[in-house]
Each structure stands twice: as C-alpha cells, then as structure tokens.
Image 1 (cartoon, rainbow, N blue to C red):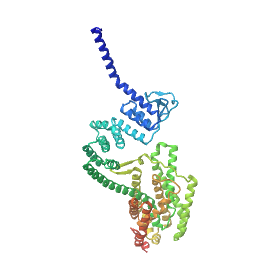
Image 2 (cartoon, helix red, strand yellow):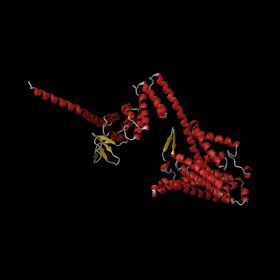
Image 3 (tube, helix red, strand yellow):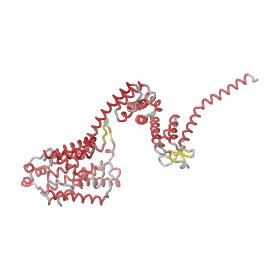
Image 4 (tube, rainbow, N blue to C red):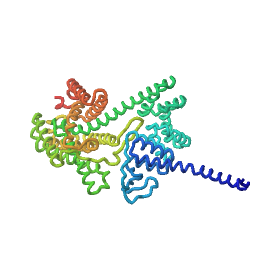
Amino acid sequence: MKSEPMLLLSRLLRMIVVATALLLAPGVAFAQSADEAFARLGADSFSDTARAVEILVQTAHPNAAVIIEALAEGRLLAGGGTVAIRTGTGGFSDARTRQPLPAEPAGVSAVRLNNNVRRVIQAALGGLGLLNPDPARRAAAAEAVFKSRDASVLPVLEGAIAKETDNRARIALRQAQAAILISKADAQPFDRLGAIDVLRERGDQDALATLRSLPGDVPQSLKEAQVRAISEIEGKLALWRAAQNLWYGLSLGSVLLLAAIGLAITFGVMGVINMAHGEMVMLGAYTTFVVQEVIRARVPGLFDYSLAVALPAAFLVAGLVGVAIERGVIRFLYGRPLETLLATWGISLILQQAVRTAFGPTNREVGAPAFMAGVFEIGGLAITWNRLWIIVFAGLVFAALLAILKLTPMGLQMRAVTQNRRMAAAMGIRTGRIDALTFGLGSGVAGLAGVALSQIDNVSPNLGQGYIIDSFMVVVFGGVGNLWGTLVAAMTLGVANKLLEPYAGAVLGKIALLVFIILFIQKRPRGLFALKGRAVEA
C-alpha cells in the first residue's frame, strides 16, 4: 500500500501530464492540419487542392496568404512530399517555412486549377484580406467575397463589419454579407430582408444576379421584396444603358467630326470629291507610329509626350501631301467631277500600296500615354480616358478652324471663294493659291484625325477606308462647307447610330441611317445648314 505522500505525488504528475496535453493540443492539431493541407496539395486532385486551401484559411496558417496567392498565379509547386513556391525573381522557397531553396526541388510540378478551385481561392483571398490594415485592400477583399458568396467567411465578415471605420470599406463589407445571406440556407427572414435592401441600394448587374439567386421556398414577403428590388434595379440599369449608349454616340460623333471636318472644308471651297481623304487620316496615324518608334528608341522617358510631337508632324505630313495632290493632279481637273473622283480614288490606292510597302500589311502598335489610359465611372457610366480626350480634342480642332475661317485673312478669302469664286477672283483673290492652301488645311486636319484614331483603332493601310463613306455622309447631311452643319451632323449620326445598334444591330443601324439621309437630301439637297451666296444659290 502506497504512503500518502506517494499518492499525492502520483496525482500531481498525472495533472501535469493532462495539463501539458491540453496546452499542446492546439499546436498538435495545427501541425496535423497543416500537414494535411500540404499533403493534399501534392495529391494532384482538384478536390484535395480546394480542401487544402480551406484548411490553410481555417487554421490561420502564417503563410496562408502567400501560398494561396502563389497557387492562384501558378507559382505553387508540389510533388514527392515537397511544396515549394516559385518567387518573382525566379528562385524557389519552401512553402512551409518561407526559407529559400538552392534550386527547384526534384519531382515537383505546378499545382493544377479548375474553375471550382479558382472560386475557392477567390473566396479564401477575400477572407484573408478582410482584416488587412489598408481600407482599399479590405474593400477589394469584400468584393471578392461578394462574388464568391462563401458562407464560411461569414463570421470573419461580421467581425470586420463590427470594427470597420472606413465608410467605403464598410459598404463593401455589408454588400458581401448580404450576398452570403441571400443564398445561405439557414439565414433568418429578417436578415434576408435587410440583405435585399442592401443589394437594391447597390443596384448593379451583380446585385441583380445575386437577388435572383434567392431560394424559392422563402416566405411570400421576401419574394415580394425581391420582385420590387429587381424591378427597381432593372429600371435603373436601363437608364444607365441609355446614358452609356449616348456617351458612345458622342464619342463616335467626335471621331466622325474629326474625320469629316477637313473634307467639309475642301468639298465646300473647291467642290472636289476627294476619295483620298481617308488616306490623309491613315498618313496621320502612321506618322504617330513613326514618332513613337523614334521616341521609344531614342528618349523613352518622353513617351507620354509622343502625341504632342505627333500632332504637328501629322498635320505637316498630311498637309504637304494634300498640297502636292492638289498642285499635281486636281488643279487640272476642276469642273470635271467624274474625272476628279476617279483620280483621287486612284491616288488613294497608290497611297495605300505605298504604306503597305513601307510598313507592311499588318496592324502597327501605337501606344497610349499614361494620361489617356484607364477608365473611370460616374454611377453606372463607364468613361474611358482616351475617348474623353478625343472628344476634347475634336472640340479644340473645331474651335481652331472656326477661328481661322472667321478671324484670319486666309479664312475670309476661303469664305469668299466658297460663296462666289468668280467674284472673288475679280476682287484680286488668287483662287488657285486659296485652293492649294485649303486642300492642304483639310488634309492636315485629316492627319490630326489620324493621330486621334490611332488611339482607338487599328493602324493599318486600310484605316482610312472605314471612315471615308461616313465622312461624306456627315458633310452631305450637315451642309457642304458649313462647319456648324458638320458638327451637328456628326453628333446626330453618331448618337443615332449607337442608339439604334441595341435594337437593329450595327449593320442594319447604319443602313437605316443611310436610307434616312437619302430621303432627307431629296427634300433638302443642300443639307441641314445650306451656305448662302450668289454662286452657291445658283
């Protein structure tokens, strides 16, 4: 029989063993879970990979974020009991310890992904980012959770909402919570009703899709709230779509204005049907390409200023080619419109082939400066910076041409020749000189249009062919030689084209506009704004 001190000592030892076991249990469980996650990563099974990601998040592994990001980017390697990460510099590190490795481990390969694993990864990264110290990162993580609707993140999400101080991040977190509650099977009706209100306030296409995922076995009050929210969002989206199409129409109208305004000047002053006008646009675009190539090779730090260099260069190149065409060909064909049309058409083919020989038949890359890259949103309206700057540029070109025509001696002489060529010649105006300068000015403006179009269209030898017919439509519809008519016609046709496209399609929409213009000029042959003058009216 043991003595009393021995019994006390025995009991004390047993208590120490139990306490030690209890203290070590979480660490042991963590180690076992981490080992399980790494074993599953090396199993080359999509389901095992998805489960490994979940385990890494649930156990709050210290390297979870790094491992999951590497997995998403295809830099996680596994095989033979080893899990490694390929670093951005081309080296390798151990996924468990983050210690660098001397070389790529033998027998490893990239862990494969499918759509289900990618969804799990997206949800995991969202959950890990909800507690990030950066509010922008928290908002981005909440958006990822919103799209994945992973219910396992809900406790973390609710904790993040409780202590969130940034308003934008809090809204994103509440929207993510609402997306989860909508589809969560055991969510309370009151919580779902609040989720419907949050999604209704968000009001975009993602919110609409989330609302439609509400299960069919919910109470009638929830169904009615769902229907009201969906109806309100659809009405709001329809208005934003109309506004977006209107913006596209203004953008297209500015492009048509740039392409047609030079043609309006030459056609109005000289009465020449210049089928090579589109090639002046093409020359401006290729001038931009050459300028950017020189800057890339010589002074790459000035690339953001490449368009500032390309604009005067394109104006000079296209303008000089225009003057050469007028002096060398067109001045011998005045009063013979059919021969002029055929001659300029032949010149357009020559210019196309010359560019094709010099630069090749394939598209050329023209880069966008930093200030023209990207997009910003106003409500549901997405506005690209390049289109916005082109609209501004078109307005500046229009204002500059108005100033030239109204405030300079050359503009006065151009208007005089437009209204009555014989009387202008009798007053001592050298009409031949005015013709050459007018053709050069119109061609130079077309070159400026080419600089703008190089930012939104393919730069190829056929670039101008896509705009020549539309340019003539704008000039005829607006009134020959009238700049204000050209502006109104360009914006009208651009907006009408984009508003018709959702209903009739791009091809049928353009055909409908062409039919409309044919019918219109039968009633008003001089266009919307007809020029006045004895010779013009005769």
